[in-house]
Amino acid sequence: MATRLSTREDYVSLLDKYDTWLFDCDGVLWQGDTLVEGATEVLQLLRHHKKAVMFVTNNATKSRKNYKKKFDTLGVEAHVDEIYGSAFAAAVYISSVMKMPKDKKVYVIGMDGLEEELRDEGIAYLGGTDPEDNTLASFSLKNWTPDPTVGAVLCGLDTSINYTKLSKAFNYLLRNEGCTFLATNEDSTYPTAEGLLPGAGSVSAPLRYALGKDPVAIGKPKGTMLDCIKAKWVSHDFDPKRTIMVGDRLNTDIEFGKAGGLATLLVLTGITKESEITGPNASPTVPDYVTNSIGDLRALLS
Amino acid sequence: MATRLSTREDYVSLLDKYDTWLFDCDGVLWQGDTLVEGATEVLQLLRHHKKAVMFVTNNATKSRKNYKKKFDTLGVEAHVDEIYGSAFAAAVYISSVMKMPKDKKVYVIGMDGLEEELRDEGIAYLGGTDPEDNTLASFSLKNWTPDPTVGAVLCGLDTSINYTKLSKAFNYLLRNEGCTFLATNEDSTYPTAEGLLPGAGSVSAPLRYALGKDPVAIGKPKGTMLDCIKAKWVSHDFDPKRTIMVGDRLNTDIEFGKAGGLATLLVLTGITKESEITGPNASPTVPDYVTNSIGDLRALLS
Image (cartoon, rainbow over the protein chains, first blue to last red):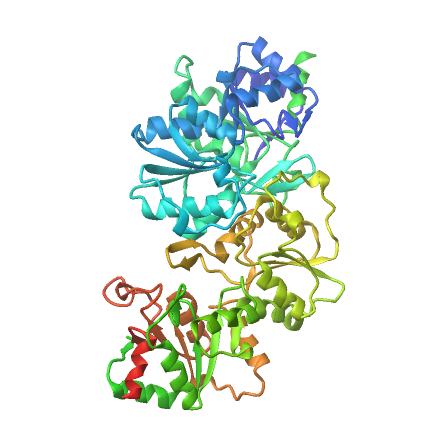
């Protein structure tokens, strides 16, 4: 059973227990382009108390640099090295975990943010935003010269998804020996201010179905994302027992925290509704703490 | 264990046992644009012996009229009412089984052949080949006015698949009460002369994943296709015990025949390889008969 936070003492106790605070962004700090009330003050308060603050997002359409612009626009303090996106984590996974040889390339289904992270890690790629692959013209294997050096297919949310990209990615995975199937994340849906759209997991679903196998998924709830945070933030003494993950999705954020041995705080300003955590149909994924909004932590200021 | 056919007597016995012969086309009668050697003579022979001949295809990109043109080009006798495609069967399903009210519409992910079959059954539709939905421009729910009369989403192979179509289809299934999720067929791959491409099942996979539910699938191996043949071919005395399904795919053609109580003949000129039907890793789907090629039935001529 999750502990419901409501009094000033509840939040004081939370502040005492955790040194590192990991935040999901959309649905926690903001909703679309609107800041959640009090989010800025709460982050300032955590920084004032010398807490380490990190932003952990499955959004792979933006690079960290571009994601920081979103913080800047909304007036939220954030530094590039505090931002962990699944695009960045995927690039780190390819270079540091897979240790893909430098003469190999990645075929990308994804957007410019994903390409930027690959470039920053020195990984060669094709596909992605290449105009040749962003077309609704009919695709035939007859007119295609596959690149034998493609050693991985990396699939993220791509709003220019099309049959040419899917056909090329499928054939690389089918023909190139040892070609690894990677996905930035497996979110089934992508929340926008006006409602849900198909998410990154839905964009890779055709490959999953055609191949009859699942990709190595990088983003939350998978541990790869936490490995990446630990590997990159070497200067910081990372103690899972003193770390809390704050999120709005049970099946990504909260499961990610629990799998990594972190404490978890669910906020109700995003995807998860009250009805999913109470009553007979409650989800089996139970966060340690629940509060209505991150803004509730302003109780600490009074 | 499948009976391996090889002698003239084997084929004579087969000819005696079955009055109705159902054929898959690609991989059986032709491979891409090349006729399988002897296919024309064998079909003529069956017609000469007063056998009923039907062509049962999961290809939903072509209407029956257009599919007949393929037969004409290759010099194979076929009549429109002998051709049963999953596009036609889907249209019959919507009008005769679902009995969708005339004031409702179908949102189509698919190509002009699917639209033609819907028109011929008097079913209103949107999406499909509409230029507005065949775009790689970014899609936002903000700029979209959904049609409240959409009562079904029908998804077939669509080589112009894109994020706008997927987003609209997903939102119709999410928002329009009672909106039915239909797929022409669930083939994971689409064979071409140069190799495999993603199939119709892969095109509907994003919706399946985003919704967390499967469509009602019409094509082989589902019985809906056989129901459609029985319903439309009323003049013909259809006896499953005297009917044989000839195909090249275990998981579509052969399972379709078995599920419908028909005899099944596997040919090895298409998807299924010898290794999949013999030895320790053989598929659990066992056809009644196996022969290398439909052309083998020319032994009857000697």
